[in-house]
Amino acid sequence: MNPITEKRAVLYARSAAQSYGDEQYTLPKRQLTEMRAYAERMNMKIMGEFVDEGCSGLNLNRPQLQRALERIGRHACDAFIVPHLARLSRSWQQLPDLLQTLKQHEVTVISLADLEIEGTPTLTERLSAIHAQTASLKNVRRKYSRITKHPPG
Image (cartoon, rainbow, N blue to C red; front, side, top):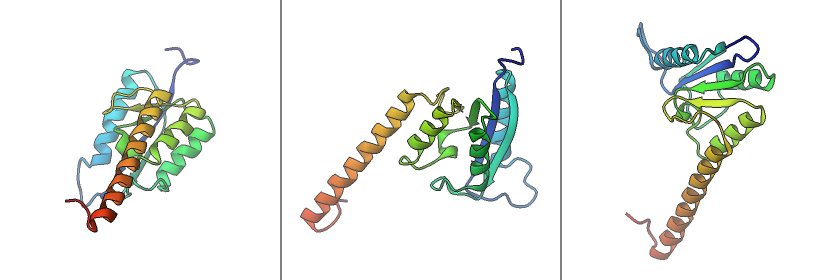
């Protein structure tokens, strides 16, 4: 690729557990190794690596995720690489909105494990549909619980 069209990538890794001791190969290190290899194969320039350790995927207020999003907001990258969408967010309520925000900034979301190469409306629509179905099932469960006076088991 020539430098004008070379994609600029930001890498993001997350682990819910902290690293302990002298672990040689923690989960975030392994995630970064895989993402670096992908970026190299795709001739992408890595503009930053962000790692949150000991942070839940249910909360988007993670220090390094927020730093990565700030960089994206400054149009400092074209691609946001994660090892798996669950590393980005475990909340099916927040993930579609986050993907839509990245798309609005013209950033391609690359999830290595999900084989989804772009944060396209199709991906966002699918995640929104899953969220809607989950919410619908929760409502049915609540109604059923009120009728039977105890949750179904």
